[in-house]
Length: 289
Image (cartoon, rainbow, N blue to C red):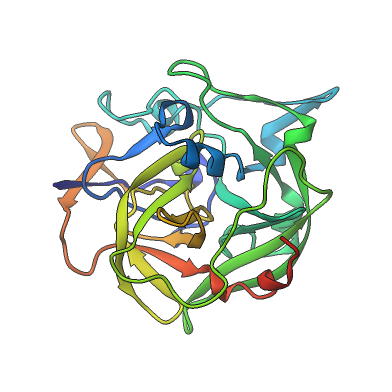
């Protein structure tokens, strides 16, 4: 298989901290919208995925939050006409996932301070309704404030990147995800990642596996972009979270007057997306879920 790599200009699209937010597409582009998925188990897991959206991008009228200005992948990044999802909105800056009744995990570079905590909202069900219509209005029951950062790491040596945050109230209508509590995922394990590549509505992407294991993170050929930072990476066989997507290879390149996917050999050595082991998140195992 050939590999698509996609470098996202985070500042232009969704204000994610770079360069740690760079990601890449490996092999065939396996991303699908939630409504397209043929896996009921993946669809169920996606319900516990949240988009991190800056408060300034949303306005509240009554019990409804609405995206103020729609910027598509095409208008925000000037992608080429053949780019997938070019007409979908790019609202999210990072991804997160539910691990307790009022607790989320995301990447450490996404929420690296109480200021970032206060400046963002966490929104569930930001997804495509069908091929033409995105959800850009959310009931207040799907939107949560970040109350506090319970634990956080963003270090190169040792290489750790995670944040455990507490929301302003318990989350209703969705289940906390199960996660690995002991040991480490094995090389070759099949994976699926669910999150918001390039700030897009929720995407489910499988067809990946663990390629290398390091002390505090593992490598995988996951199809992810900037905006996937903080996404849950699941073990396909068990449905448990194995880690947090945190960084990777370059995403988009400029060519022929527009931005397009960079193509790299699928089996290129020393390439891959980095995923912090879920077991490295301090305080996570103390949660009652």
